[in-house]
Amino acid sequence: MEKNLFRYIPKVDALLDNAEIKKALEEVPRKIVLSSIREELDLFREEIREKKLNEYEAIKRSEKIIDNILYRIKRKNSYALRRVINGTGIVIHTNIGRSLISREVMENVVEIATNYSNLEYDISTGERGSRYSHLKDIITEITGAEDAMVVNNNAAAVMLVLSTLAKGREVIVSRGELIEIGGSFRIPDVMEESGAVLKAVGTTNKTHLEDYENAINENTAALLKVHTSNYRILGFTSSVSSEELYPLKVKYNLPLIEDLGSGVLVDLSKFGLEYEPTVQDSINKGVDIVTFSGDKLLGGPQAGIIAGKKEYIDRMKKNPLTRAFRVDKFTISALEATLRLYLDEKTAVEKIPTLRMLTMRVEELEKRTKKLYDRIIGTVDHEICNIEIVDGFSEVGGGSLPLEKIPTKCIRIRFNEYSIAEFERALREFRIPIIARVYKNSLYLDLRTIQEEEYEILVEGIQYGLKRMKGCI
Image (tube, rainbow, N blue to C red; front, top):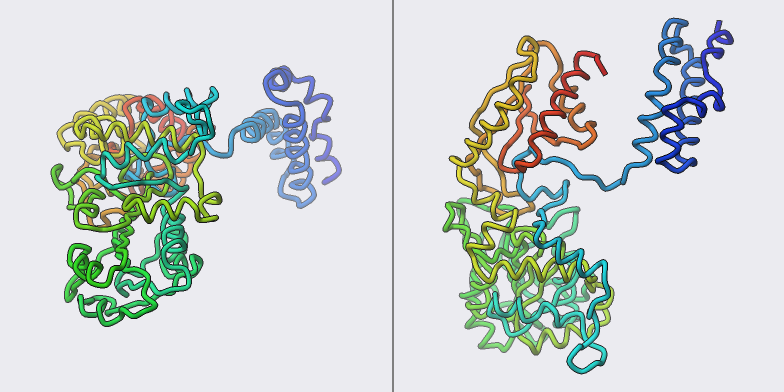
């Protein structure tokens, strides 16, 4: 019986002669088409050998083989890094790309990337220039720092600072600030790799000014503050601010370093969010070196920004690690264009997608949700699912403002019989994956992180998911 089933497996030549496969060959490399055919035929043979198919199932399998091959071709010919739709309500979602770059910013990136540029060329002198010069003026103007430089992420920024200012010497930091910054990267590990010696003071929940002063000795190189942006310790706590550390750093002539993590440049409390210390605040309080990310609350590309005293940054530029951590023209052009928007705060909030989403009012979200709901509701079978507008809460994400719950509007989808997990999977497997939130057997689409131009894609994706649920696909 098993041998008879093999006759339902088509020949490679016959498949290549199929009109749809021929069309695919015109658009896709032949190598991809052939490998897709062979993989599908191999799977068919394996299912027969393992007696997973009866004759009826083998016939049906054979009838669907062209569709299966075309699906494989499409998957193989797709980029590994793909666009997705963020329906989770997490604005700075680490797993799906963090902050969005505005189209206006991308115009500058395209202009620089598709042409030659003065990346390391000084136009005024006609001689070799420095890639760090392009961002210095804009960062110092916005933050009030004396000097600035940019590396490829904030962990690299912290490592470069400590390697330059404290290699082989002690850096004093509160035990309550020895955080893990994501991906199992921890402040103590970064310090160890930099060559600095960790000197932890105080306890997890309480650190006092005298704890820092008592730890200072002839081998102390710096005082380090780490902003605990990705968690909060509540209750019986106390900590020492950078402002309180300022007299101590002056008394002992030690550099004061602060790792802000997210590095916000706008006071978010103006928009009803929890206060998050700005880079400008740290510089004004006398911090010598501030490090922060470009791709979190700042809303730009991945980068680690170092702002502060010129004498220290000049030393960092000469550190051999600087070359290993240096940024390319894509990052420089994207970051410069993003920072230019901060020259006017109102413009920054309107045009930087991260800030726009975080500050969007519920009234606007309600209008947008109703608009999408009206498009969806007329295309669904109300006997199999229930769709409604509900209140919810968005999150900042990216390790920023962990306690902040931002009121939002969501579209909730529930099924009478079908599995919500299967529907969620179908949305993820749509041609443009839709990433949603599942909670208590319901699927939520949070409108705070959904762009208006994505509405039609969402409607199409939901229709696709429903067809998958009913076995029509």
